[in-house]
View (cartoon, rainbow, N blue to C red):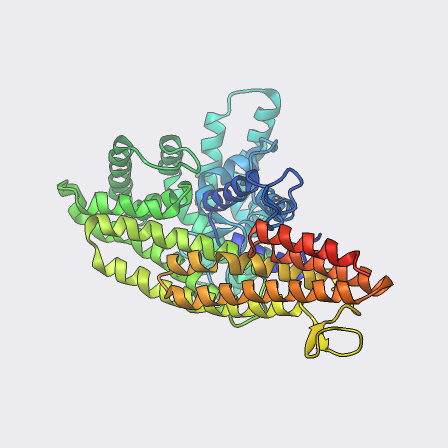
Length: 484
């Protein structure tokens, strides 16, 4: 089973919107989900129920995570890697339609580095990087050289950005060298981050990458680091908190850091309230972007696997933000969470309706008659299900089976999704029973075709039907197949 171009595009867009830590959490969640499945990895658990094609999804996710440097792997230790490492908590896999605050698209890194190696204003940075590479190769001390690279790059990028923002011709030349305006905007972000590289290094030393939670001691250390950075630059104080979002396995837990700062009696925080407020606004901006993306995709063609993955992640994000806000009694943020849940819930309703249609497509019927005992519509055994239709239906069944629990997590009314799930379960059961009648009535190749379709149908319906019911249907089908 392979991933279609459309699925790759949707999955890449979703993964690309996440920080490295959040994407790794999603990857770990899929691996954990697969752990409960059979070793085949084909999405069938010990009870015979169908699930996500984990190997397919994990392979695709692993490829994309490796491409963005998020999965630990043997990577070349050189000046380029050292230069970009302080900014890794701001990296995302792909750029959106517009520049997002404190988010740098990984595809921008190569053209930015190329400019750093070739632009006259960055000559000192290029020489420093070359010297650093020589020192690494020779096994020499590199700390002073690393610092020289950052100092030279800060000065060089500063000159380029200043000229580009005051001279349109200069800006057009730099944009052309970089490839497009979005890369230029990412370069400007890196130029701003270069003013506080030491603070970013301190944060990385303080909080492990993809940290699952924060201790009380770490909260106080983050507060101290934030205040130190803010005293140097109001902008950079905010950057420390925004980097923390990308550093946490569960980004929504950064909201607890904001509440810690907001509730502190430290007088030094009085002047830093506005900078601290950037943290929750950024979290909610990303959260609401997830909701709008679901709303947008709900109007298009369904990819049931990716829809389930994204809705689950959105629900995790919503639950996490709500828990943090409830601890403080922050009704303003709770209302924002509920508003986005409403948007996502409406999109999810459309996903479920589309999933039911995909399931119906795998139960073809034609008008009864002839040797069949069914005088109305009967299963159309003359035309085998295509692998594409069967695959889509199987994915749709997984999504429909999860509908009641996901709908509840989105704050929606459970009745609609429960009715859809019940309807789907009934349709699968009725279609299977009709196929048993076809098996009994048919002969030769027609009987074989009916048995093949029944087995396909049971594999598709496995997430919706009880394993005992599936076993009983198979027993009845076996008995019907030997009827004379």
